[in-house]
Length: 248
Image (cartoon, rainbow, N blue to C red; front, side, top):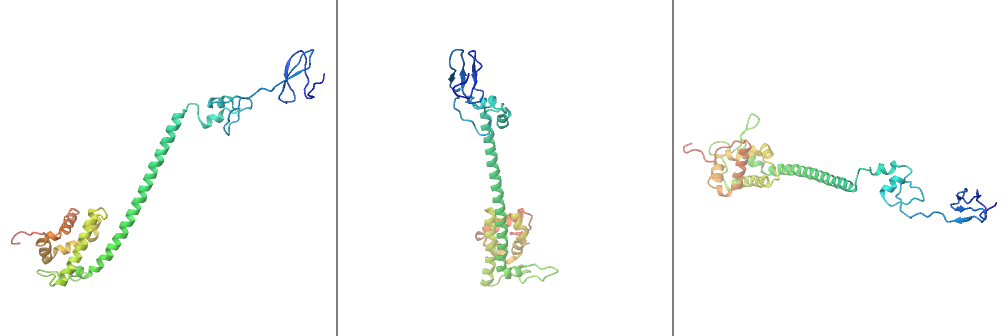
């Protein structure tokens, strides 16, 4: 018997059957009546996340449903294992964030240390340039060795003789006072200062006239220089005693 739709054939006997052509309709046949077309099954609307293949016509509401109804049951498990809870995921994300922050701090600290070392190296070179302006005093106080003659102020009773000489000496010593302030402020290192310039301080202190006039009688005006002497002594530098024993 032909059907009104032209696409289905019934087996008769009052049996409900689905359209064999896949049109999505259900029909019910009876021996004495025209087949009745039934509406297609309804599907509850739900949002399916991208990447999960869930059959059409299945009600989906929870993550468990995605796992149970997916044609590939391992798809969801690859994303989130069954034994992992949302709290554990949040904890993992928090830990990763903390680790990322610690790495950022470590990297920034390294950059700051590198910048500090570069600035210190530049300052040491500028300090060498500053010492060249006091070459005259330095040469006069130089003790001499097999390669060079002693300076003019080396020997008992020798030293600055006029106001111009004393002004040059005070400017030279003033540079070392600034070095002491920089060491105290953490800009310069005492060990490096001792290695590079400690011998200059030793030559100043070794001159009897300068030591007695400025560092003993005039000690109140040279406190930073005296502090530098003590600091360099702590680094192993040996100086002439500021207050020699009586009769010495």
